[in-house]
Length: 197
Image (tube, rainbow, N blue to C red; front, top):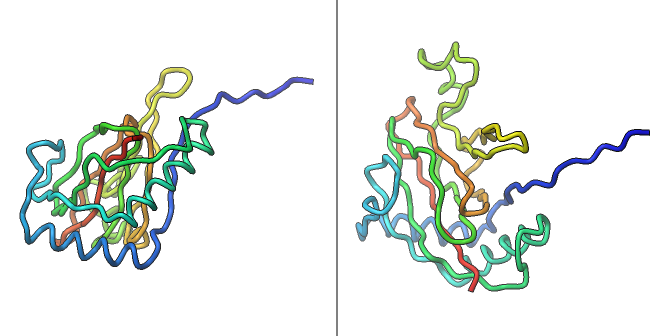
């Protein structure tokens, strides 16, 4: 009888942020825009408004818990450690803006969706998208090589159901954010990096 042996691989952790943490983070995000401490000059995003956001101790504790869960589930590293934030910022993405394929620094990165103003069904009806084989408009995508060396993508169909949700992943995992076209409202997200102390 033949044995089936899969190769081990990594993934990401997805969660819904506890309500009070999310409310506090939203308040911090909107304050960051008023303060205007821009970080565009150190980020790859083709986004006109990106601002530093402060990480509260309860949020850091929550993020550290997700990183420890990741390490435990995937055997990625020392899952008993503590983490520190090495950078956290808010993206106020407008129509046509995007984040090209990139990776981060540190051990882990995360994205938290604050506000998603578009409907993916409407996005997929745009003239440049509706006949495409793969509809990627407005999506968040991960990229990795498989065991044969082929570049593979994993796409999250991010819409308003993602508000208050988070993904945490290894910082060196390449990812991108595609542009949206159907609204003049901003798509707001928070991203950041964690490092094992």
